[in-house]
Amino acid sequence: MNYIPVFFVLLKSLIHYPQLVGDGWDEETRFRMEVRAKQLEWERIRLEQEVEQLSLQKVQLMGVFQPFALGVLGVLILVLWLMGCIRSLRREEYEGENNDANEGEIRNGDANGEGNVENEVVNEAANGEDNNVAPAVHEEDNDFEDNIGRIIIERIQLPVQNLQRGCDWTKNLMDNYTVYSGHVLSNSFYPGLQRAIGVGSAFEGWSPHEEDVVFQVFIPMTPPRGHSFHLELDSAEQRHVRNFRVRVQLECTCSKEQQAENMLCFLHHPEEELRSNQDASLLDTLCTDSYLDVQKTARWFYQLVRAIWPALPQSHNWHLKLLPSSRSCQFQVSNGIEIFRIEMLFGVRRGDSDIFVSSQRREAYTQSTAWPETYAVAEMKFFEHIAEQAPHDSLHLKCLQFFTRLVLGFSFSTYSMKTIVMHLLTVVPVSQWRRRDFLQRLVDIINGLHLSVREKLLDHFIVGNQMLPQVIRLPPDVQQALPYNLFHHLAEDPAAYSQAINEYQVLQKKFKRIIRGEQ
Image 1 (cartoon, rainbow, N blue to C red):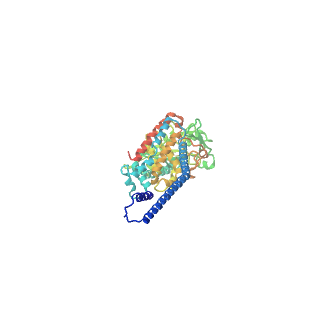
Image 2: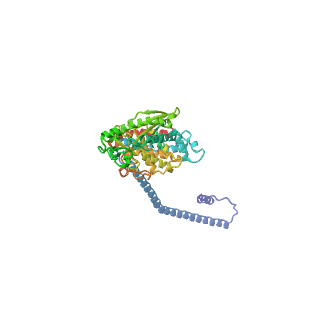
Image 3: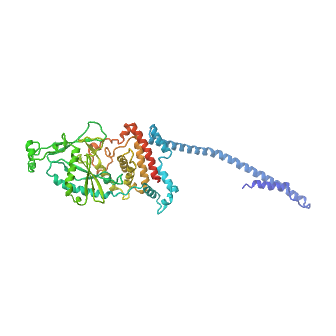
């Protein structure tokens, strides 16, 4: 409080309105009063001068600090401007320079909050605006992120699948099949069958289907006695899927060891003798123009399964039903309670690697002598490697299962989503795929799809990948090749690209509705 004005008012009241005194005061008293008044007047003048001096010093200090304050403000404005520029540059670098109209719609959608799914869900949980999510988040424990993951898992409602039961049963059946077929084919000139390898989604630990799961196995074939296999790359046209042909060549068996097996040499014995005393060579049974024929081999597999089934232990309690297929052997087994559908693929190993040429169809039309290169065994070994490294509560397979189910009905294949997840598994530590990280991983995957569609580029996971685990063995040409683009059709066909852009927008909205619990 400023006491100087109050003091002046009191002083003025004393001077102009002195209290009445008695007439009895003498001249000396009156003189002392006048002296006192003069002293007070001088004191007032001194105080006024001090106030003016203080005001002058304040003005001087303001003159000194004002440029400094303006300078600090200018620096802050400059820093904020630079941060905005850096953020804009990063955003431009991420978005690229593409002026396509549909692509612009996606960017505008992201700018309006279409892409910020994770923050929306977390905010809903924190504020309790989404069906009383907040109480559920904070009950039991204080781990907010873990509870967010639990809520998302409840919302997406993935079916519980007992894939391991079917995998174990199929492996047991195939082991018995290999043993019995080995006895049947030991002295024949049909391919030798090695132990079946479980491949495909079921053996990798996930499946996009709640029912009708197909348990795929791959059976490597070896050439019979007196024959050799030679793989030839089909370079008649440039393909994004490499096709091979398996040329069958007869080998001389005139050595004493092979003669002791009562085998006649297909190269050096007369044809009449061979026809009379020995079964036909592989060239005459499963080949077309010296090349192993996929369709003929598939029919032979059907005949072998039908012939061996009664001798297998499983035949006592299970019923076998053969299913039609031109490039594999498919059948269904049931016991009145359980039903398993099994597909037997077959092919030839490339050297000692984990890459094979397979009977599996890859294109709408595949010639009967064309054997596409398959990476199914290598991919299965990758998932086995991840399973060995990951904690027991890892949810990487649930992430994969969710997205492969999500894209059903869209043009995005389950293999594309699997490829995106495999790429993420090589850069995101396996310890960061737990429930507390579930929402972030889902966002990473859909962002990966967004980027791949926008850039029209999704690299194959196996071909040319230098970051694969050492347990996966690749031929030199596969390891050193440039990765081919799974989305090459988007770059080649503008209509396909526009369709992919539109479908991604629909898929993104569907994803957000599921995460928010709106469906």
